[in-house]
Image (cartoon, rainbow, N blue to C red; front, side, top):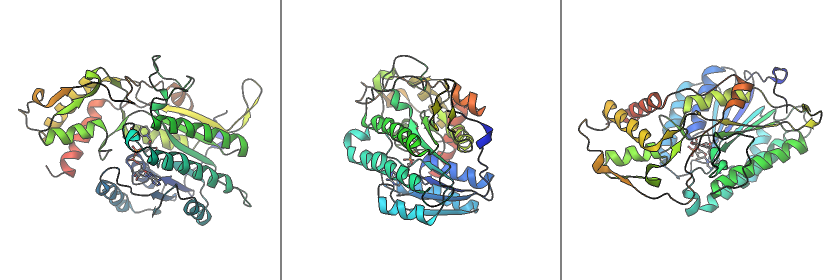
Length: 361
Ligand SMILES: NC(=O)c1ccc[n+]([C@@H]2O[C@H](COP(=O)([O-])OP(=O)(O)OC[C@H]3O[C@@H](n4cnc5c(N)ncnc54)[C@H](O)[C@@H]3O)[C@@H](O)[C@H]2O)c1
């Protein structure tokens, strides 16, 4: 696979579909596109499901609306094939960023159907729509970028996690659906020449993030005076990646699709690429909680004399949990000259300040 400036897509004047646009990462991506590319037509799709509070998704959409620009929001489900076909019939998308998915590792044990619907059937519908976007027209979708996840690495011991590593041992259904996305995308890139890039995100956090994620859930509980449970007795490391770093990576990747060409081996390669986007600085869960607490106190979400020791409980790991995540993001740096860099303290500070304002504390 060749990444080069020859195929660079100028997003100005292009029509971009962002699925999962009311979601955490999707809403930031849309805002960035509207702010930076004034002539980019951005179509956002989301089914606004109630996996977590819908009011937060609506709030994110309101923030996008305030920016103006060439923005259209469509409520719909990527698992509805007829709907997806109609959407692709209505617009000729140049770039598609598929972020719509059922996220979360633990919820895949309670509600596996949601994962198969959104992550497998939904993703297949997007691939088919991209494939048929070439029917009868000169130019179809020039680049499909989609979200994969660090969870595909399962309980791999070798660190850091590299895109060259074998990821055939998922430990949750969520991870299995993300790995399946990578396989499906590869087949479509090979069969129909659709340039596809999969991005393995590592624990993304920030203001207006996902309430089901630890930093947000801990904050809600601590504020209510409830105990937080720290899994695997705190023996857990995560490579936390700030939302702005993720969006920077996505925007850079969107503009440079992988192209078919002769690889170093002389074989014709498929227009398909995979990257890790992670901070490459795993943090111990207890250190992370410590910084979160300091920042919540600093922002005034929690009082200065908060008795943290009385509100924490060290418990065993949950099924599907992995002990650590650690991104080797050197391929991203090599091909896109970008490396996530926001420190956990800076990122959690922004989260704490947003939280205070959003919940009017
Ligand atoms: N946040 C992270 O730490 C993280 C890490 C790894 C991978 N990812 C992946 O990144 C993507 C975005 O994650 P996020 O954190 O923004 O999650 P999110 O839940 O905030 O956003 C996903 C959005 O997709 C929508 N959606 C779900 N199913 C849909 C369907 N069938 N049709 C249309 N819309 C649907 C949801 O309503 C939601 O608004 C997901 O694919 C997720 O698996 C996220």
